[in-house]
Length: 192
Image 1 (cartoon, rainbow, N blue to C red):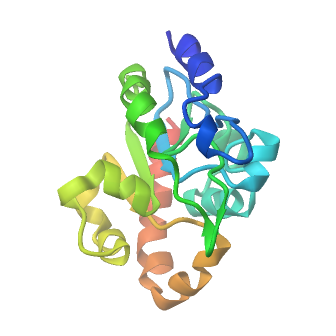
Image 2: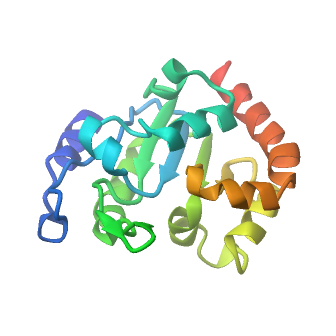
């Protein structure tokens, strides 16, 4: 059932009229995935390679999680599910927001198949807005700083983009307090 669903998603053209670079839905999942990583949308590099998180943001995310590249790309461990499956194009200050059609059309179907999930990582404001709804705080910073409130099954993170270097420097608690707990939680699932 999951293979059929992934094939349907990868052949989706729902947003084609809105995507100047064309469609190339990028995701990875397996019915046995134990951790779901819900990100924003593929960037231009990932749009070209077709490999989720195959860029600088992905390198930083793997560091944050404390896992190897093979672990990250093992779909029986990690489901890599963006809010928007295709590259949305460039905006005035970075990439455009993910298309809303993807989550509405596909997320519920995907999560019905992911029966072994132990942890869901909500990366960035788009994923947090969609999944936390009224449980999130006024800003992404406040939500991430309050990460304990969502544990142990949900973990909130900022986007690992190099564009967020200033945010990371302004919030030293992120590296000193949050990341050690994240790594410990991920290790407890990955190393079973």
